[in-house]
Amino acid sequence: MKSVDTKVREIKLFIDGEYVTSSSHSLFEVKNPATQEVIAKVHEATKEDVDRACKAARRAFEEGPWRTITVKERCEKIRRMAEIIMERREELARLEATDVGKPYSVAFEKEIPRSAHNLKFFADFVEQLGGEVYPMEEEYLNYTRYEPVGVAALITPWNLPFMLTTWKLGPCLATGNTAVIKPAEATPLTVSLLGEIAKEAGIPDGVVNVVHGFGANSTGEFLTAHPEVDLISFTGETTTGKAIMKTGADTLKRVSFELGGKAANIIFEDADLNKAIPVSIQAAFLNSGQVCLAGSRILVQRSIFDEFVSRFKKAAEELVVGDPQDPRTNMGPLVSEEHYKKVTSYLEIAKQENATLITGGKRPDLPEYLKNGYYLEPTIYVQENPEARICQEEIFGPVVTLIPFDTEEEALQIANNTQYGLNGVIWTENLQRAHRVSHKVRAGTIWVNCWFVRDLRAPFGGFKKSGIGREGGKHSLEFFTEAKNICIALK
Image (cartoon, rainbow, N blue to C red):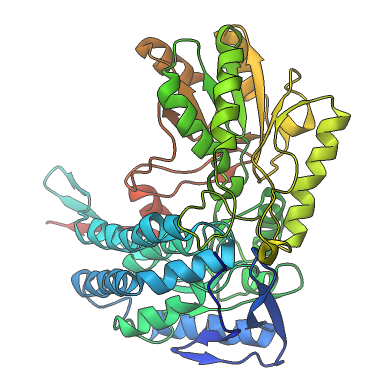
């Protein structure tokens, strides 16, 4: 099956309620990672363009009605955005599959509906919020208001571009802020449509702006340094997060970062392998392993190690790697040439570290029209040394390591021996062990006998170098609002 033919799109900036060209007329190309065909030419925002977007967002915040209309009216418009997304579900899913290289079925069945849910959830959540009241004897009454902070820079990654942008945009808008969005330069297609979707939903001009470009010395740096930006929500690589902190420090910008991960997926000997293996396959190879929450370090108790390796290998080899638009495909290509080279460099590192290749490690045999795509088979190594680079560094591709352990204490030591702490997975039928190990793994989210289950009311974020702050429910509220106390004298 050949990829759906896609015309070369012109992706403009969306500023103050309209599509505009870059002031420098500089364009960059975006390619389909499955075929390397050019699918879009994107306007790169200059410093002047970013200034225009930030000032439009500031005017919309200070002078427009968005901040001052009733919460009910504001949230109704956000829910309308969610409805429009579902009305355009097919279009958005096709674009996401073409742009990112992920299976269309995943985008259509899961990611686009979840994107709509993100907006609807935060609209409902904020509309139903109450406040706190603190009486002081009979003389004073204190009550708390949660007011918007101002202009938010929302910087989102290339692996789940639409879903992760709405995850940020929902609480940002529901609490009355305005936004300037910068999607990843590799995958701008779906996110570029959020401005027009907001406008169609009745959201005032200037509230949602979208600018495109790169990071250092480009759009990202111009945005994070801009004096009109009050807060930055960023999801991406850890070193980029460090650079953003430095850039925003001079103006004391509030930051929320969800950064890299190298999650331990711990399989104890009493685990139900009929559940653990298919979910561990998903945790390893969903989106070609390009997921910050990937369970890429699989720690397996030695008593069941051989059985797990055999069954896990068989399940990985049954995955269908191919055209993202083909409904039979389980795994598409890596997102770009640059990223492909980074991921495949670890194949040589694995050899140098004497890791044992179980399966994969090469390009799959694919039809001629996919010959230029950046494909890699699901790749599994066994590595007895948990200090090895392939066990420590975030590869962000379909490459996983299986590490044997003997005792619970050893598993915990290996799991926590990392600079990251975004998430972890534990497989056991022992309830006491599940709680005990969950408490001791140093990570922001622990899944027990499951993976990638997300309740938007719960906190999400990382320990150590996996992030700063938390998103979700009241935690998003704390980031996107200022708490104001009002004290009234009663006498």
